[in-house]
Structure formats: C-alpha cells, structure tokens
Length: 255
Image (tube, rainbow, N blue to C red; front, side, top):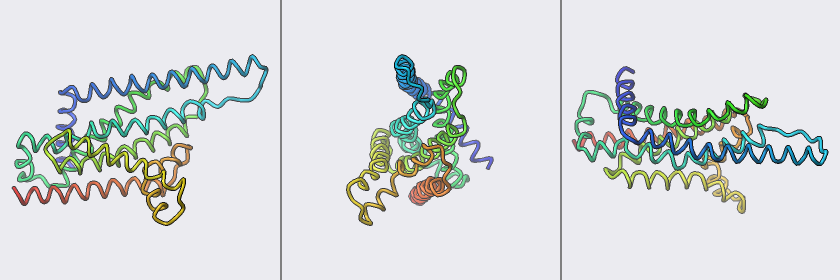
C-alpha cells in the first residue's frame, strides 16, 4: 500500500507541476459554470412565466436543474478522461523511464493502481471543484441532496471505469496524442452502444446496450443506488486494470 501511495503522490505532483491539471480545472469549471447558469436561468424564467399566468404547478429544482446538469457532467467526462489518462504510461515510454519502472522492485499492480488512483483523484477533484456551483442552489433554494449525491457517485464510478480503460490504452503507445485519441474513441463507443436498443430488440443489440456506460448511469441519474449498475462499473475497472497488468507484464519481459 505504501508503494501505491508513493506512486499516486508522484503522479499527482506531475499533474499539478505541469499546466495539465490547472487547464483541466479551469476549462471544465468554465464550461460547467456556463451550463449551470443556463439551466438556472431557464428554471427562473419558467417559474416567472408560471407565476404571471397564475399557475400553481410546483417546480422541482432537482429534476429541472441538478439532474440534467449532472447528466451533462457525465457527458463532459468523455472529453476529460482521455486528457487525464493519455500520459500515464505513454509519457514514461516517451521519456525512456518505462524500462526503469518495469525492472524496479515495485510490483506491476502497485504501479498500475498508483497511476490509476492518481488519475481518478484528479478526475474527482475536477468534478467536485466545478460542483461548488451547487452551493448557490442550497443557499437560495431547497434541493434534495440525497439523489444529488447518488448521481455524483454515478459520475465518479463512470469516470473511474473509463480511466481504467484509458490506463490500459496508454500502455500501448508512447505517443500521448494517439493514446488520447484511442481512449476518446473507446469511451465514445461505450457511450453510443446504447443507441442500438432503440431500433433493435435482438440479443446482440441487448448485449451492446448492456455494455454501454450510459445504460448503467440511468439509475444513478434518477437518484437510485443500483447494486447491479455499480457492479458493472467495478467490473469495467477490473477488466481495464487486468489488461493493463498484462500489458505491463509484456513490457517487463521485453525489458
């Protein structure tokens, strides 16, 4: 565990000593803040229109602001994940330090978990930093915080699963741009797999739909903590890190 923490801390330090983490924090917060402002503005506009027309239909800030906003946050993760994961092993290969890493007394699993933990912590920090906007909703409104936390958990699990895939892809090349592009393509495919179930109900379509990350995010998006969907994300994390371990093993043998 100590080696995992050392590698994780080293990786996080490399993120924050370079412009990567700060650029991602800034870009994501600006985009998230702009989307937040639009949802809140639309919510206020609808409330004022209903009041002027004398309608007493209750408005739900969770359903009309928080839920669509966190759903958008899940989509934005498709762009953030490749930028975080592309450098994990590709940079080691480019700098020629992968051989030192592969022949070091540290176990492969410790290297992999340390790097993946660092990427996941950065991803969670970016989401939480942008989510400071929700403070205004609690200051001036009365949203239900429980379904919001469940949806945030879904966003974190989805990001961690995609980062595990990105970690594996990063071991396949020393070019960070290629690693980022391949990770984005893989993440996008796992997102759009669910589309086939809208026009086909055959077995292969159901299997592809089940493989989609967005299919398993739906329950979290509704504020429902689903065990089977959490297990799906944990399974994707396991598979991604398992293949990363096999790739690292081949690097160790070649070294």
